[in-house]
Image 1: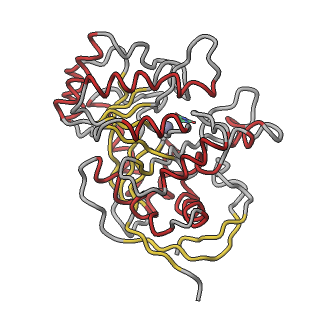
Image 2 (image 1 turned 60 degrees about the horizontal axis):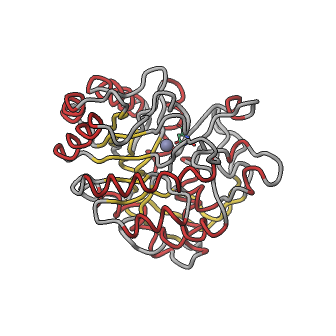
Length: 344
Ligand code: DOR
Ligand code: ZN
């Protein structure tokens, strides 16, 4: 008999579902094992900025889901993008439309952040954050700053003082530092109060910068924040497997068609949805902490978002398989590699 593990159905607290045909292509993978996914708002050509955008995007996702053969329900958890011109009124409308969180992309740090936030400290944006706090919405932050003479690998550390200021100024605002990639970020989240948590991706648990540029440039490992040093990765594995409820899964599964990755100015983002629980099982098993995987993927995120736990379970079976080189229009994470665990 092959070894088997059973987990409560997952919450993926950071997904790029995209729109149109790509949405239909990628959603089935997440919905296989997750019952909820945070839908990131950096879509194009229509970004999710208002209550009407939230309603439109949720309908798009639900329509795509309804076209699939489904055994389990799936609920997209909606977000709006917070820009310099996002007002408390827009927050109220988005909340009313069902948005559970607002997402900040600082200007210029990643895919589709060309209209990202310039200033975390001005009076107007503080009023917007206060409106989120009052409404009980979460603030999700891409925690990097693009500053003069700051290397891409240092952008996360440069952001951390801003995180401390926000956490102090808004003690009742739940803040998620998304896709942490450094030891410094993990330690900051440990130090901060109960209102601050972090998501961790599977690719940051697996990769270092060497896997992006150290052995030929590997565009399918290109993402923001960039994978960092070995000590950083060790720390991420340590906190993800520590059973600390401040750290939970947000995959940042970020599909881009192959030709948008394999070109002169490739898009950032790693498509992990097709292999997510399978690779996580490998990481947790290697750390000797398979018993803690369920809390990381299915409990701590729900708790931080004040949501009930999902019903239903998934099972993983220890049985080798090879990840396809391409799935639809996208090259998935670990393409062509042999994995140890399969979804039952
Ligand atoms: O690598 C990334 N890709 N990081 C992000 O923050 C955004 C994402 C995307 O939308 O492709
Ligand atoms: Zn993302």
